[in-house]
Image (tube, rainbow, N blue to C red):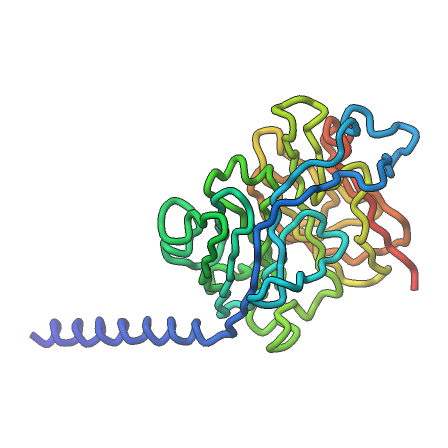
Length: 328
């Protein structure tokens, strides 16, 4: 009888402790975002040139540069009237959502296109209605309709023991996920370790000066025709992605992501610098489809450096850009 009483008491205690931990986790900030899916033209090389090796031209990949895409666009509020400006280097990526471990993300999604779409996150905590895929209320939002997703950046969504102070997760549409990836409906969530954020209002990590994100993806625009296989970094080809700018000695975190099919196996290489990646020093990081990883760098030499996939066919097809390191 005493043993049963003790066991019952401990069970009750553990139950209330679990509730307390859940409440504590939910006491972080609530961060709201307003995002619309919109149909618009996209130019893979706005300059019309090969900015890596101009003498080589754009070859077959320059025959058509502008295609209709579907994109996630961020807005300042629920009126969806004032879009949020993004850095040039983000290219086709949707708004970057940020949270600190313990925060709740409220993402108000409006489908302004002609297809049912959704927002499916990786990494964060959600219930079935907030999965954005595979059933549930948020799995397929019809044209003209809206839905608010609730996602929690719990401990398991945050950096692990060997991770840097912030890590990256994908979000993307998942109604017909193989098609929607190539349409352009892709964005990221960055979660910062609790106590490492810049301030209560600013969830960015305080131990870095810049965070850059790079999506390596082959967009299939013409039913497997080579001219329509756009080998991109953030939706641009042949050096047409500007904005990766920093200084010697600054602390830079690179969030690297990939999506696509069996051709989207990438080896990401920085010229002139190295990165620290899960305790290993390297200048090449391997990515497979749906990979998400983060690496830290402190640039040591000035230059306008190449940043590209080292797979030969991918380099030839334009999966390259430059990033600039200036001296102070």
